[in-house]
Image (cartoon, rainbow, N blue to C red; front, side, top):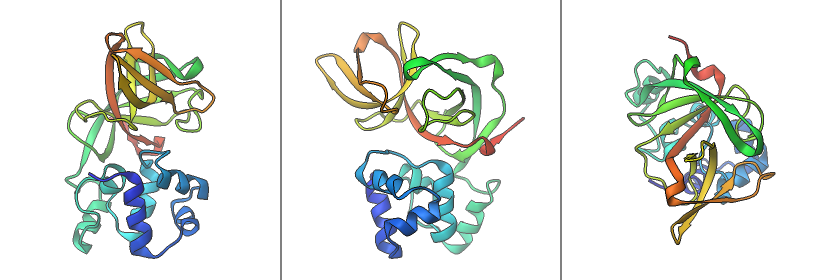
Length: 219
């Protein structure tokens, strides 16, 4: 699996477009493309990957996760645009709503308001959470979903879901582990870095994607 900067550089090199044109195609700012290339952002949002796929034919799962071949054949590409026929897309159950609280924490995950699914490229046992509130903007907006892959290995630089033993739940960027403590930075620059002792972390799961409400399918 290569990194997002490497994948974006491949797209730029093979297509011959510059950063400004890629930003226009993905419908993002040039600054966002710079962040993709610098590694400041570790994964593409699904809707950006879909726009790049539609223009150039690069697979959504390769753009987001670096899995599989970069491009499909013409026949495969047509099948992948039909989510009902793509073997890489799975029904990811939405297991609840995450209420975004102060300081970048999730005040609550309410499993009673789950239901439906997200149909996206993902590994087995992935699950989704719908986010409510604005404390994690601009990275996570009110009404968007996060896709969590509990079996995916977590490495420095990854966005992760953390549940601490004191009940706090949050999404952070995993920086490094040292002397029995794991260090994280916030997805929102307004919040300071944070560290936890290993025994203070109840759950540490990989965040695979952040997706729009339009990708949600009710039961």
